[in-house]
Figure 1 (cartoon, rainbow, N blue to C red):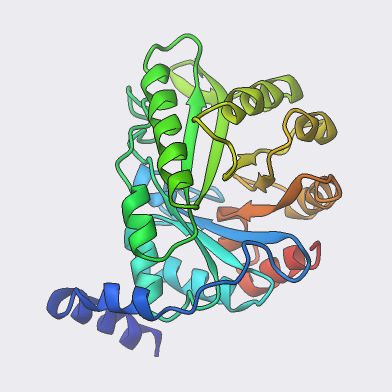
Figure 2: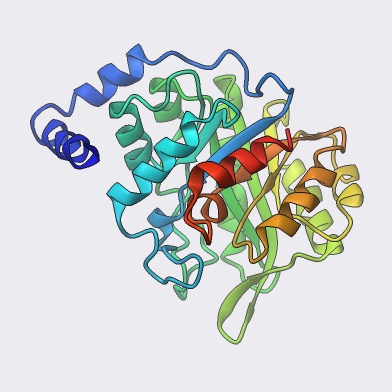
Length: 290
């Protein structure tokens, strides 16, 4: 029973924390960051660490960790879902559950820009570091890099992201950079999802660090994805975000995947918490795009 597996997680964390490292050392790693289709499908689950628990109109949808883990396990069972993105706590739980064998794993690095905080644009690196990502045998790190030209707290985030890109590249690990042009509207941080805004964020993010050899970009869907893809030669994955109409969004994702440097999808809440509750069906529908 699932409740028994969750109880076992709690027991291990209390009595045998070294089991996490043992599970990491024993894990069968993926042989490639992409699947047999030549594309990747990464399920994303790093939202809770930033206090972003809402989805589908429920402000606390992601607050139940056992429920979230169960949904992730269902998603990862699909062979077309070839990886996961999460913070250390979630990835460690999935390791102990044996859900990461053969999967590509990205550690989320900066979760300091808490959702709704006055300092939200200051996305400090409070999560995994390049050293710990390498030590755990994971495949790369992900950064959230929001760029507000009217907020001087953007500069330290850009600098820290550049250092993270370098630290990952030194270890031959992928740096998945998620850039946005952002600004405050009525006190809330809002991302610019126009084609021009996304193109500008791509141009800035592509130049971070002393090398871009291991950098991927995680970008939102914009009206003209061909222009977005043309803004860089770096591999791009399309992010999911909060999706109102999943069927229409799948059509858009499918069109984006035809672009040469769009190598896959990184989707989280909309698939883990679909309106009909069918996680396996939502994941399978996206896998069919690949």
